[in-house]
Amino acid sequence: MKKVLSTLTIQNKKYAYSLAHVKPDVVHVECKAARINQEFCASDVAELLIDLPNLIIAEKAQQDRQSDIVRFRVSSEDKSKIEAKAVKAGFDSVSDYLRHLALA
Image (cartoon, rainbow, N blue to C red; front, side):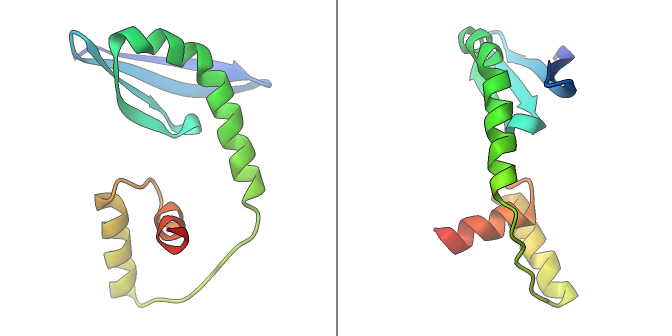
């Protein structure tokens, strides 16, 4: 599996992304700034790369809107359980997981 690493410059800041062939017609794309970490049909990757700057800008705008902080205390055991469930459910952070649960 050949992996290609590259960066994209938006507003004088560099954002990394990677492409890896999984199968002849499937490419795994990862760009943390755009919150993308999944497989795409190889024929769709060109359009995704064209739209990637817009996806990164939209994700940054979403993060800017989330400025309030919610805090609460849990035991170490509960924290470990929550973290494990967040990873198992495919979330990048406990905050995203808890936000998803609370707003569902």
